[in-house]
Length: 541
Image (cartoon, rainbow, N blue to C red):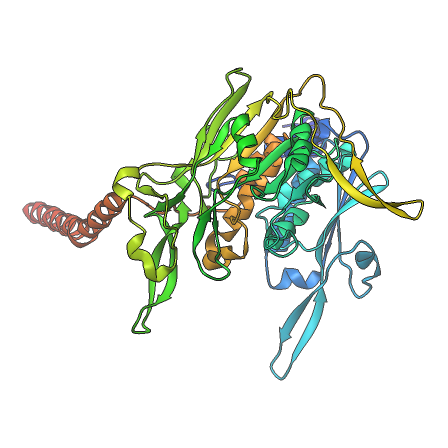
C-alpha cells in the first residue's frame, strides 16, 4: 500500500466513523433479552414524535448517592434516553443531581426520601431525590418519586400525551352508598388513579355530569340512585360518555353480621340490563377462592378457602379483548353473576372480560356468610355448578332508558326574597342523536375496598385492572397495551385445575427421582465403555 493510498484510506475511515456517529443519533437500538421486552419501548412510545409539535423536556432529578447502592436509577436513565433517541429530536432528556440545593426540585413538588447510611461507628441519614419533571410549552407534569420500571413507560407516555394534547386525564366517580365513601372505602383506587395522572372528580348522585368528562365510574347505587340521578347518567351515555359500573344484587353486611340480603333495585340494575347486561340475583361461590385465617371452636388458628371471595385466575380472561389480553387475574369479594341481554337493535356489541372457574356455583338464598357456617356454602351447588360471567363490556349506540318518558323532577328548597320556597330543578333534554359509547359492568363493588388487604399479592392486580379499564373506556387502547407489558420478568401462573397440578407434581417427582439419575448412570456406563475400548485399542498398537 502506498503512502497516498494509506492517507486516503485513513480519511475515508474517519469520514465513515463521523457519518456513523451522526447516523446513530437517528438510528438507535439496543438488544432486550427479557421475556416480555420489558426494557423496549412500545410502538406508541416510539412514535410519540408524530404527536409532538414543540420540544418536550424531561428532567430526571436523581441524587448521586442512588447510584452507589442500587442500579435501578441507571435503568430509569436508560429508558429515558431511549425516549430521547427514538423521538427524532422532539424529546430532550436531562439528568440532574439536586446536590445540597433542593429548591429547584422541591419547586416542582418532588418528594425527597431519607436514606440511612450505616457506618462502622454510627448511622446517618441523607436526603435523596428520584423524580421526573416533564415539560411542554408552559405546562408540566411531575412524577414525584420514581424507583421502579414497572409502570414508568406508562406514566411517562401518558403524561406526554396529556401535555401535548392539552387534555388533562380526568374521570368522574359516583359512590352513593353511605358506608362506602370514595375518600375512605375506595381510597386505594383514588390513590392509584391520581398516581397514574388522572384528575378525579367526585360527583354527588343527581349532580350534573360534565359533557366533557371522558370517563365515569359508578360503584353501587341500586338502592340509592333515583330516577333523577339515573337520568343524568343515561344522558351522559347518550352523549358518548363511557361508564364503568361496579354493581351488586346482594348486600353483605361485613361490618357486623356477615349476612346478606337481596337489594331492592329502584332503577339502576334495570337500566344497565336495558343497555345489555343483567346482574343476576345471587352470589358466586368458587373453589378457586381466597384463603382466610379462622379460629375454630377450639381456638386453633386455621387457614381455609372462603368460596364467597372468588380468585379469578389468569387463564379466565378474554385474550381477544384489549383489557384482558394480558390478564393478571383479580380477587372479587361477594361477586354476583352477569348475563347478556343485548338490545334487539343490533347496535350494541357485548364481550365477556373474565369468568369464574368451571367449579363455581351460586348461593341464591339464606345468605349466611360467616366463616364458621361454611357447611352451608355448598347448598344448591350441584344444580348451579359451572362457569359464571363476572365482568363484561359493551360497545355501540345504546338505547335511552328514558326514551318516551317524561323527565324526572326533583324539588329543592331555597331562600327567595327571604322566604323558603320549593323549586324544581329542570333537567336538560336528551340529545337528538345518541353517540357511540362504551360500558363495562363488574358484578362486584368491593374489588378495591380495604378487603384487598387480605391478599396483598393480588391487590395490585385489582387496581391495575381498573386502571386499564379507565384507559380503555377513554379510548386509549394503545396505552392499555403499555400497562399490559409492565413488570420485568413476569410470574408463573398458578395452576387452578387440581388434576393438572397433581399430574405435574407427579411428573416432576418421577423426573427428578428416577429419570435424571438413570440418564446419569447410562452416561457414566457409556463413558466407561468408551474409555475401555480406547485403552484396548492403544494396547493392541
